[in-house]
Image (cartoon, rainbow, N blue to C red; front, side):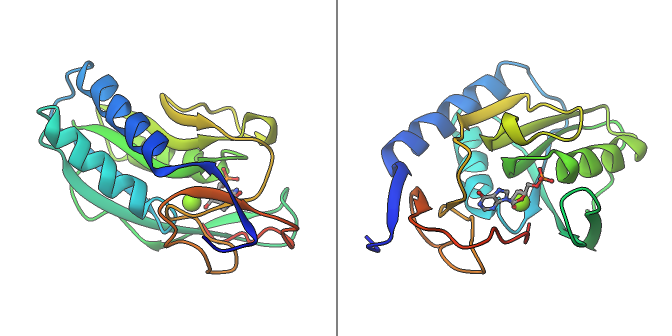
Length: 182
Ligand code: IMP
Ligand code: MG
């Protein structure tokens, strides 16, 4: 383990939560299910979640949207679409998957976009929730873990493009300024 990273949620804990989230989603009996992963940070979580969904009998299709937020200061940040969903979402039950629900701006933007395109429902699965940072009126329907107010890395999440590959979620001791890459 890198010596400046402390473990917050280990592989075993993550795997157990992901399996439970898949069971919770399956219990709602979604129709024509489309999983939309928000790149880049959700790639590892989404990969595990769709496999867990398969194990509990769901047959989701998968899509990706790549968003980035930019602009100085958290209040003025805007969301830019770097790569959009290609599939038709009209009439479908959509699960929007992201790594962290923080201010909520990213997921509110993605949710509204899919709703405007006629999704039957849009539910949010966030691996981590930082409710103390919320700026938009949004909550996740499925949450992996409540996250302390720290900058976290690993399991897809980065700090300055580093640490996405870690198989666990950790935090950097003496972390520098937060990177806004989504
Ligand atoms: P927001 O909810 O629009 O503020 O955006 C949340 C996004 O910011 C997440 O999807 C992450 O990509 C990124 N982010 C927020 N907090 C962290 C963190 O602690 N580590 C890594 N990325 C983060
Ligand atoms: Mg993200």
